[in-house]
Length: 410
Image 1 (cartoon, rainbow, N blue to C red):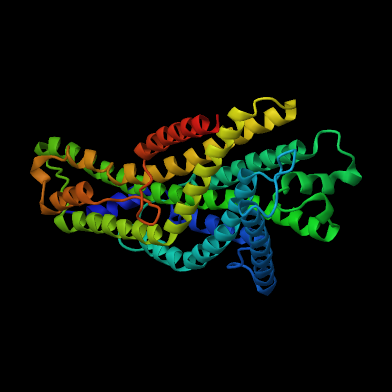
Image 2 (cartoon, rainbow, N blue to C red; image 1 turned 90 degrees about the vertical axis):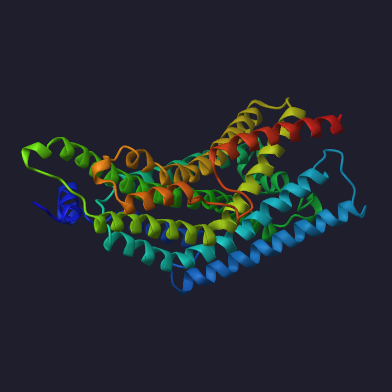
């Protein structure tokens, strides 16, 4: 007896009607609402928008001042002082840090604004066509990953503040010592005032949050796309498994036949999913490029400074190794989470290859060709794709870079 298998399978695969809505989109929206506190106002009101413009202006002012100080040093208009706080590397890293913060704010703002349309398209995939059961763990995983990134980043920044001022810094001298130590590329002792120190202190925290947030966006969006591919692949695996069991049970008069038009629905679901990934890649590509270049620069800088300056107090050593480890872990997490999209986009092929020949049809063949030839990945504006091979290539490049720097520095 011929039945509407695709509807029956989906009913078996879902436990109840209230579980048919995936929790990923509301959870991401909640994360973006929190982002209004550090300058991304899309899900806020007029106050959030005013704060975003203020943050943008202050970051731009600090970046302009840092670049001007760097130009003066390169032009010979200012000299390196004896304790080395005005070296080119430190002024350059300060300029890059705030340049990344400014670009991160702008690009994150643009992406979160576009997310409204992307989420509507994502929701249509969830509620129309091939309706899949929700990922019951996605909300918990998104919250856990966001909390872990926030916690590790908070500890790293606290260690950087202690390292900059020392453990026994008097409270009344803390702000001055911290600003002059961490922003020596921007201010000298005679230029210090409380009216400059307070905005610099606030913007340094905002810049650090934005740096971590840009990586968080990439990781969370990658988790959502991977989750959807996983559910689609699981559905195909279940269908093929039923087809194989039905082939053995034909002699009992209980055939299980999946119609061509049902396989067409599955193939079209993969087409729409691939279109969603490409849309996100187009809108997220600039942020991926910025994140990759910024993480690569600061990893190389940390390695170089650590090799040159092995000595120091205990807190400085703890901060150095923790900061370097956190940088490496976060950068690897970005690449590996995005690489999972590419891996899961082709995982259904292994199930299609074992599909019984008696039920093999043109739509299955088209789906195989589509999954085999379609290139699904996140990229940095098309300059490179994020996959696991790139991780090894970047590691080799960092080693070469450090060796060259050490050779010329000696």
